[in-house]
Image (cartoon, rainbow, N blue to C red):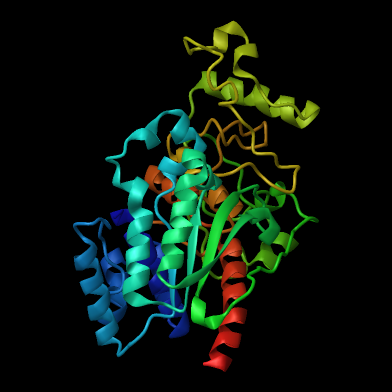
Length: 387
């Protein structure tokens, strides 16, 4: 439903298409702002452009969405769907939203989008599906909603494997737990589902940051500060060295916040303690109730093998994602957030800075997604041998 996210996916599709056609120079021209977005998109065949469409999925739009999918399948001479990958918006299932009473709004269609997911499963009957959401989905209404979700999907003819996975177990430098439900058609008789773990225990978060130029608040510098280290090369974050760096830009901060940032950074770097807002000097406290959200200012721990979770709230302000370098005293840049999520540097996000932060915070980390895809691929090979 988000036009900026649609453009991001279209731009990424152009990257892969041009790379496959050995015309990557066109993508580089776009990153250098030598050609327009329309020029870039004009390189894509119409059948690729039509597969990315801007729609809100709802009961009212479901038939229209399926018509678009059907037309795309027909244009590609595609008679069946191998897999369905996705998940309803997680905001109303999160612990934070529930503490604010947001889930109690039964009229919010986001609460019920899993039912539309099941409808799409029933219509296209793919071999497998992958459903992603926050852990909070398991405990809503004392777990009744999660049990209803699993039962509904099973009723559509699938064996389901609900797992709680952490991105840091898949090479991502971030503590990010998500519920991943994998399903296979019952007739395949799949008994178990697991994914290959590849921890990066020898690396720390700073390994994802230190080759980027130090920034002042509000600054953007799109060139590298140093050569890539082993983490950046092994993860693929900086493997495409001919692609120019983009979006290493950060917010402007006022001096009051920067002083708080410095206190928080010093406290973490020297004592490994987190800042408690109410314990700040009184001259720096601006909130009427300093005891609410006492951990609002939080440093990204550069010296640990994982950061705390990057969420969409990073688009609101940067207080919860402070860069660990006290000399910079700023929140992390767009590119730094993308790297902590394991996006490669050749990935370009469309939209305003705020919209880009939202996309990054909402995303499944690519390294985690890759391992999930590899696990699916192995099972799919065995399934196809039996078909």
